[in-house]
Amino acid sequence: MEPTEYFILTLFIALGIFSIVAAILNLDWYFQTSGAMTFVKWLGRKGARIFYALLGLGLIACGVTGLLFWN
Image (cartoon, rainbow, N blue to C red):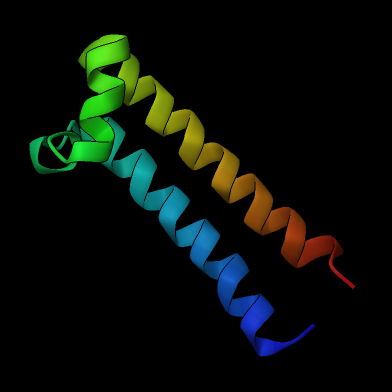
């Protein structure tokens, strides 16, 4: 695996952790961005937090799976 592939997969994991932390801590500055506000309008604040926590878990799962099984 190339170093850039390691970097991208590690970035997936880091962004996933960041998304989960933002959802758990209910960070105002995170949920007031234009991208997050779309989901806040659709799902409400609690729904957006759940969405971003699940998104974070998905990013972490993709990163870990890539690191383990990418040949």
